[in-house]
Amino acid sequence: MAAKVTLKDIAREVGLSPTAVSLVLNDRPCKISEESRRRIKEVARRKRYVPNQIARSLVTQRSQTIGLVVPNIESRFFSSLARRLELGCRERGCALLITNSDDAPGNDAELVRLLTARGADGLFVVASDEASPADHGLAATLSQIPVPYVMVDRVVAGLPCDKVSFNNEQGGYLACRHLLEAGHRRVACIVNIVSQTGRERLSGYLRALREFGVEPDPDLVLTSAYYIEDAYEASKALFSTDATAVFASSDNIALGLLKRLYARGLRVPRDVSVVSYDNSAADVLFEPTLTSIEQNVSELADAALDLLFRRLDEESAGELGAPEERVLEPRLVAGESVRQLSA
Image 1 (tube, helix red, strand yellow):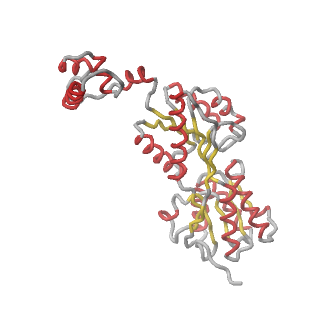
Image 2: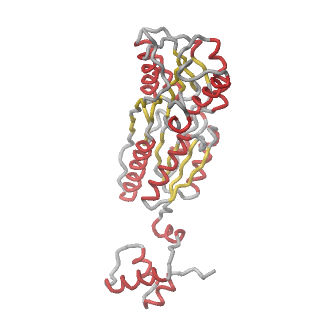
C-alpha cells in the first residue's frame, strides 16, 4: 500500500511551506501568487492528495458531519427520508451519520448526546413516538446541546427550535373524507393512539365523520403500533364490525391489515375499501394500487436541509435567527383500493 501523501510532501515539491499549501488547498485567504496556487493544486492532484478531515476540523472547527436520529430505519418512509437527507448533506460536502432509536424514547436523548460528542456540526431529530419526548429527557438534552438541530416529522410541542412536519390532522381528514365521498358510512380506523402523529390523524378522521353527519363509533377505532405484525393482530377485531372501509394510518398498518384480509379470503376493494397513509409503498407492494395520503419525502427533507444549513451559516456569522416551524400539507393520491358504493 502506497504511503499517504501529506502537506509536507506537496510543500517539499513546490518549494513552499506546509502552511502555505494548506491555505491554498483549503481555499483560505493568503498572499500567494496564482502560479504558485496552480502548482500546488497540480501537485496535489498528481499525488492524489486526500485531505485529513480530522486535521482540517481542528482549523475550521467543523467536522463536516451531520447526525440523524430516526425511530425505525426499516420503515420505508424513514429509510426514504434518511436517503434524501444523506444525498442533500453530501451535495453540501457533509457526511450523514445515521442512528436508529428503535422507537424507544429512552434512546433518543442518548443518541443525541452520542452524535454531539462525536463532533456532528448539526442534527436532524425524528423523535420516538411511543411517549411524549418531554417525559424522557429529549427536550432537556436538545436544549443543552451546542449545535443547531431540526426536529423532523415528529416534533416536541413547546420546544423552541426549528421544526418541519406534515399536517397529520389534515391527512386523516382527507383519508376519511375520500371514503365518505365514495358512499361509505361505516368507516373503521386503525391508528397508533399512543403516538402524537396517530392522535392527530385520528382527529382528522373524526372531523370528516362529523362533517358528513356520521356519529363516530368507538368500536370502529382499532389501535395498533406502526408495525406490520401489530396491525395484523389489531385487524382481527375488524371482522366483528360491519365496516365497509378502513383508514389505515400508515403503510405498515396497511400491510398488516391486507395480510389479515387476504388470510381471511377477502379482497380490496371488492370486500373492503382501504385508504393508507405515507404513500411510500403502495404502488410497489399492492395490486390493485392503494389510495394513500402522501407525505412527500423530498419536500420534507429539502425543508429540513434548508433550515439546518441556514442555521450553520448563521452560526458561522454569529447571527442566529429565531426558530422557525414549517408545516407542510399532505395530499391524497388516488389508487384503486376504494370501491364506490351505489346510492
